[in-house]
Length: 312
Image (cartoon, rainbow, N blue to C red; front, side, top):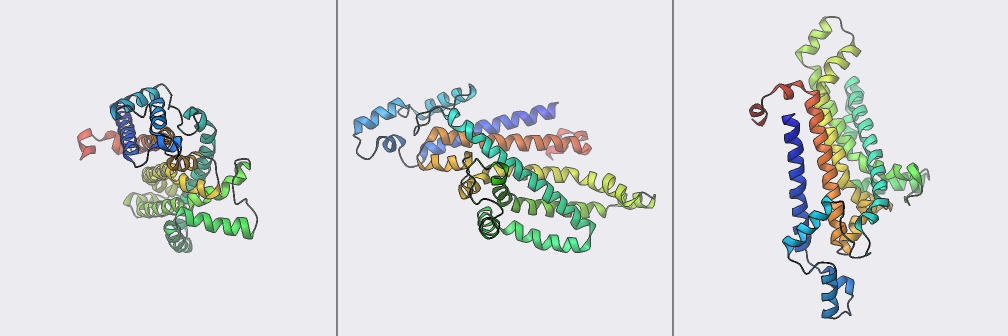
């Protein structure tokens, strides 16, 4: 329980520090939101009225404390551009992003773990995995998006090139594949290397000498011992999807948090940018914290180690 408490406390402190860094960075960035809202023909007095109405004339520490207090009560403020509550603007877009992340995570876990296992079970599969995964890791998500759109949308016509949010799951397949490609390739390499390492261990040879079948040896002595490392990398891959949605949503016209973040940065809508950035950081921290706790549950050596030994 002490280890869990330390992990959760560290996650909360990380989230608080991240919110402060994001807030200060946005405040120090060039441009003035009030001037943008007022327009190019606005007078200094009109700009001052807009700044006062949106609390932009307050000191930076006071603005941060007011914003943080609102966040603790579920109030992310008002959008400077749309003059609506930030929560009402984000609510319809969260579902699109979560659906994209969920489908991408499924592709990563099934494709990465499956390919890594197949590469261990057959020698030709191992060679093919090395070549294909090497190419997959090197391809950026925006390049994968362009290639997949050209092949499956324009040439073959199997899937829509643009997801308008009304096509359901079918409209998210290409974006999810583009986002999952490099992560699935990397996970396949990790799974392949981890399983091969476990196959060379002494306890695997002892299990074989006792007459245990290949399936039993692989399941009980190879896959189980490699599970903690696979779980850690899988968790990091899923956590990394949150930031990757920005590029893919823009490429496929998905009205999610990522594309809305790009629009809000361009319009200097700081409250929206703060809310989306904080949600992305929170999702990343939540995923990595859950992965850390699951790693502790799977690996008895971590649970048995003393705190000083773990830090060492």
